[in-house]
Image (cartoon, rainbow, N blue to C red; front, side):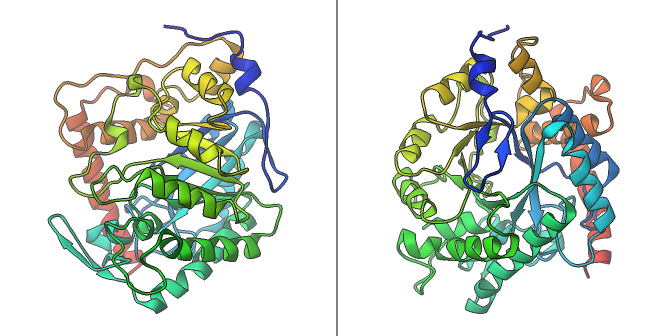
Length: 401
């Protein structure tokens, strides 16, 4: 059903000026997703370049490359990119160039999976040692923590040299910086644990190091959780304190999402987009304590929802993930009034992780311009996804022994 209204182009088509002086041409952003389209050795592929080119051609103001690692030692998956010495710089430049057509920005989301590092190719480390069902990791030393800001700064400088328009730091969804913020997973009693300000400390140090490396005019965003959606995890009240701390930094865009990928946790992305934006009320609270633009990601399925979020002042930009996987040109369609809202598929009793795998494999179909032939079940998509990961693990271990 087409829910476009006359004010869609007026509201969502307005440019967004970032504090650093950069400009996004409209308010619609392709949110970060783990596309798993790297070559298994940390470098981009031509298919990955085509995927981001499609979103740029489709009108997105910005596309974020999810799960780009600052170190090969702690990846989320073996299809991740790694912005470190030895990466294929020519391929990286080609990806940046293809994702920047049509006036679009493309930013890598810089991260470290921490306790969630992929076991077959990692020895996971987090803020504190954990030994719970489905999740074991060592605790980081002070030397490990002290090395993080410079690692992120080097990766950000490489991103800038390759031609990307900015970078986003990943402090959400249960990965390393999210783990530092969460009292459920950060049990430290030194300067990096305890109060919200102490748990935020390494993030603040990293923001400073990255800003020094890339300069004042280069966009620097961050993704945070509104809530971990776990008992004992980061609460919305604590997340508001995080936003207050970010307001004192040089960050240009705060991307609000939530949930974690810890074993057994319910991922926000497993919900139905028809239920509406997930963290709208938190975004309103965040806007009240910062002058930094807020991007709201999660649960947007209609243009009317996106317009309402921006018109109400809850958000300055809208992050779309699965909607842009279903229709890579949805930004243009909405802004021109030439297309309706996506029809989200419904799956009967999919296996755990099957829906996420289905969308992940559809990203591959988009990258190969064959989405019209993409019709697997979630179970089949999960099998294909796992088989591809296994093959790439072998390549990863040869490249990063």
